[in-house]
Amino acid sequence: MANIQKLLPRYSAILDGKQKPRFKESKKVLEEKIAQAFAMLEDCTLCERTCGVDRTKGKVGYCKSEGELSVSAHYVGDADLSMFTPSYDVFFLGCTLKCVFCQNPETSQVEEDKKEITEKGLAKLINQRLTPKIIDFVGGDPLPQLPFVLKVLQEVRKNLPVMWNSSFYMTPEAMNILAGVVDVYCPDFKYGNDECAKRLSDVKNYTGIVKRNIQLAAVDSELIIRHLVMPNHVECCSKPVIDFVYRNFKGKVPLELMSQYTPYWKAKDYPDINRKLRKKEFEEVADYARSKNLTCYESIVKNMDEICKDYIVLG
Image 1 (tube, rainbow, N blue to C red):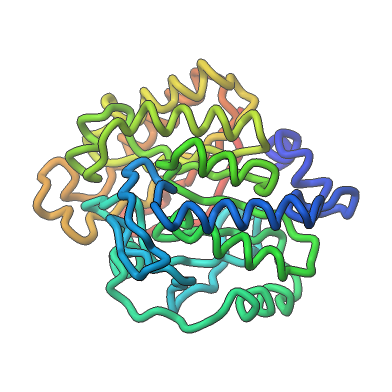
Image 2 (cartoon, rainbow, N blue to C red; image 1 turned 90 degrees about the vertical axis):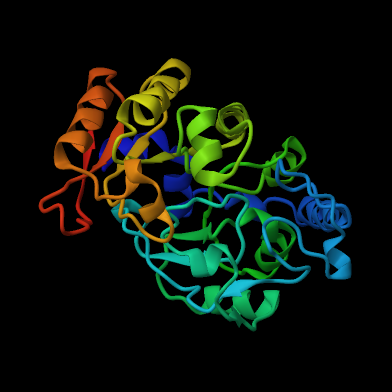
């Protein structure tokens, strides 16, 4: 993990107690960001769908998120990526995308019961956690919950780094609110073209928006780019994603390649993705990343019937 840690010096410094997490740097700035984020809920423009609904009045947009904290009943978890384990993973209800292969549609489509908890209550649970290395805000997608995330951080006493684990389909205004708060961005870069994004996630102008936001994130803080390798999408999606990472960051930003694709939810209706990933497909993507000399996490597949949680570092 040494190569990866060198690319995340601030994260490592926070763990070593040499720096504070960014949300701790200015109480006044955090208060201002909270006010800005709640103001955006009145005519919601957090994501690039810009529904414009007044979530403070109980109206619900595409993400199906309400005007209050919406936490999954399964909101505590542990990340698989060893340098971040143990983490404190917070799963929020609602999502800006509608991926037909979603691994947790009950959470993303708000079909499960909401865990009743306040921002102070959630912060208390985080404060009581003994040894987390990071607070990981995930989903669904954490973006619709941005104002509430900031209020949670306002109550967190521990000096823990913050990870923003998101589809990155957000407006520049939302990115600006996150700036100076997040220690490690974790964009989930799914597609290498807009056609696949529209067909499989019901999203427009995907690649331009996600690329823009990844570049903004790289200027603001440290990041790891994640990519789920899908069957039959090596040429149209995986290789273009790798090309983007190479052109813009060379080996300076880690890439996590994920092999655990499983045809969940509605994937059976889409023949190209209605099967598990083949080992040779994943190896082709991993080899392509190696050829670019990228610093890369690779999920090692020992058995295609299993999800392997071992990781190695390449590059």
